[in-house]
Length: 182
Image 1 (cartoon, rainbow, N blue to C red):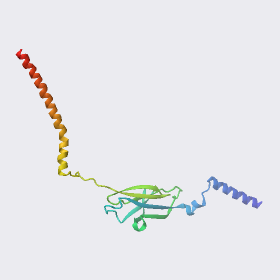
Image 2 (tube, rainbow, N blue to C red):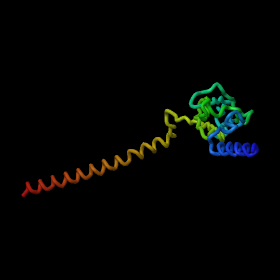
Image 3 (cartoon, rainbow, N blue to C red):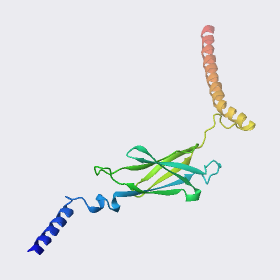
Image 4 (cartoon, rainbow, N blue to C red):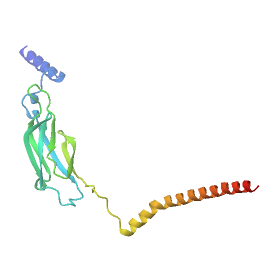
């Protein structure tokens, strides 16, 4: 009889675990209550054509929208990648933490974020291009040609309008003079 009671208790505990009524052992102190956050940086700057890419960048770990005191430095030495191991996955009440990352973006670059804590975060640093305040000046012969092209249509229109006015005016005056002679 004692053997049957033990079997019944085991079956009951298994049923409760399967139905989710009892927290799994891993959520109460096993390995599953931590998370590893991997992050990497890639550069969209034409292979550092300006030579302005920094030697390293600092990435801050963010949990539930608040900066943590955990930072990592990414550089060419670590392949622009790092993993922070063993972060708590849930708070004291069992609610899952949401982890993100934030880079202290280097000057002249725009940071674009993708990914998530489960897979990994990718920070793409895109090189910003500057737009000059003054347009690029044209060569002297292009300036003359450009000026001629913009005014040429205006001069032709003005010449045509003046010709029409003179022709119409001459026709009207000619008719008046004929009437006066008659």
